[in-house]
Length: 548
Image (spheres, rainbow, N blue to C red):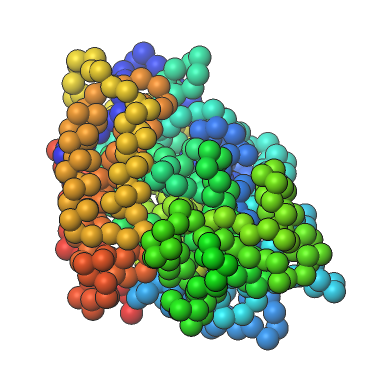
């Protein structure tokens, strides 16, 4: 990979305004807000959002939160399901810790006012692919994220020490002698500002916008991954990109996630001839893990020369479907579809980045003073493939852990905050050359979808790397202006790392499927880690075996 400049843009601390806070949180999704709620009340907290609180991936989560709430369920069963989905790369200690903290976090949300769906006076529990039992707590039928975010936002608004800046683009993390000490940000009308913090928590979400087809909101452009990489943090398991099997596919419309809880209720996947096809690919049929279902759909689309398949609910109770999935019913009605009668056109789309910034069991990254939680982090919970409805759970658990840990360390530091010498590296002084940002962005998304998508090959990945590195040599060193251009530079940085990691892993494991290496290889039951060296180059130490 070509050298990556330390900062996206040049800046002179003497010419900029400065803001001081105890804890800086980058990202206002569930992980970020849960971290803010865990911070000691004596400390000042600043939460930064690229758009508004309503634009995080957490807000759009449909399925629910996996947790052992049924007396007949067992923690060991949830752990086993998680480890099985992770395909040999989970950290068993992390899995055990998260699974066993889940009920407490569900109860905490209820105490705060979350209205989860109930049946016969008890929490209604759904079932999704990869789970051996019904254990998914949900709200508003298929709008769990919206209800959970409403709840935590209301709690944050009660904390006067927490401030939120919306419409703030975080350009880069600030470091001094290898320690994170804040960030440089940009806001419309004000330009650049240096924010100094005792501790920084990265909760910026994923990178689904790298792909032409995605369930992610427009803000998910991998900014946090790129800025952490430029600051020297270790990134791990970037080849593992999860694709959701069922996204509403209507040409010309935005892609709408169709929760797999629908398949948990008994929906079938059928082809254009009306034939149910999943049983021929996996004995678990529609309830197989997401990677299995996604690959089966793509394979069957090729067999039937189709651009999509269908979800069929016509054999299910119409009243139950309308009550359980009001969001789906409304989304389909906008296109004249009656889900209780009409087949729903679907196809897979990029959904979740399983890897991310490496963190320990408390949420610390490898850069002192920097923590991470949520999709941007690689905690060891997901391994090579995330089990359905474990993402909101991870955000709750690690958001709280990171907030508590950062709070504790901040209280141990001197009270005064001051401007520090910032580690800078020279950037080219020439202005940006001719660049159609939107055209390159579309080209990048199409390339990633074709060559670094659901099914991969050495030849395709090599072609993708050659193209990505050519673009990166031209785009990354330039001093571009504006969020769309900075997003493109971040997307290119992360895309190069994902493609290289996928090219290196010569096996199929979890969500990473190589057509030229279709079976798992015991020699590859290990993690790939990456970090940027002082000269801007990419370092890849020897792969690391997962904890036993």
